[in-house]
Image (cartoon, rainbow, N blue to C red; front, side, top):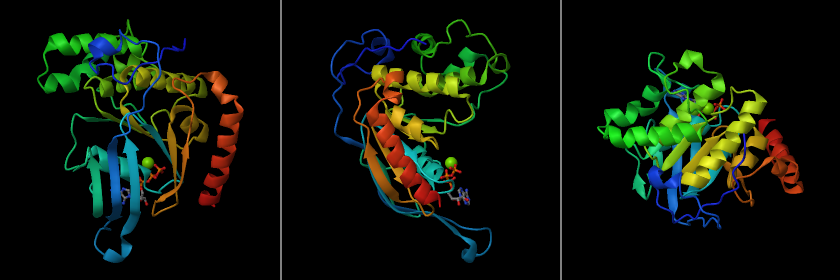
Length: 288
Ligand SMILES: Nc1ncnc2c1ncn2[C@@H]1O[C@H](COP(=O)(O)OP(=O)(O)OP(=O)(O)O)[C@@H](O)[C@H]1O
Ligand SMILES: [Mg+2]
């Protein structure tokens, strides 16, 4: 896959109709306003029956994520990463504290947020195009608008020509790209990705990471990306939050000061290698 080196000005109009056509060279201006906030959030899951068996998944979590920022969450299994993401999605709610989107408490799921899961959960009886447009069609958006967006997005995720294929006719990586196009078609302001490339082979995974950064350059959503892979976190993120073992808190926050999109050469740079060594050491301490 060729890597675009085009940079986009953050003030560019957000509509797909313009985004994918009018990318212009120039610096990326990160907007500093906050998009998502965890304000002293704790989450306890009750056990079935007795309070003694309840699970404290997250305790006193404070995170501020800026608009258009790409933030990865790393941490040992069971530390509450998916729980935190589900609270942003509006699938789960804090036991105490507040999770805020644009300064307002999140009370339900909404089209301003889209979730990409580890396994592409596509409807097997629908074609690629039908899967991509299913959500927007149900919301009553005009076909003129959603079909044009679908065409632009399927092109961006390199699936042009596969519109009439069914999921069983696609590879795992292609299915995952359908899921990403489906998540982006509603123009979500926040893209939530829970180990989205975990099931892919390393080559497809790298291609997907590059594609994600290309899409970010063109569209600039806020992205929250959960992964167990330190290299993946460094490659895609502006900032990495390393969580402690359960109950999860932010143990370490690391900024990745490298312009996006990033190419393979970044993987071999001294900056990348140093970050990777530091994060691996911190993660190992947490796991042990
Ligand atoms: N619906 C639930 N009911 C009860 N306990 C839950 C529920 N969901 C998660 N938990 C518990 O909360 C803790 C955190 O789970 P979570 O899925 O957020 O972890 P995670 O960091 O995403 O882990 P992994 O890296 O394995 O995906 C775990 O101990 C888990 O057993
Ligand atoms: Mg999880």
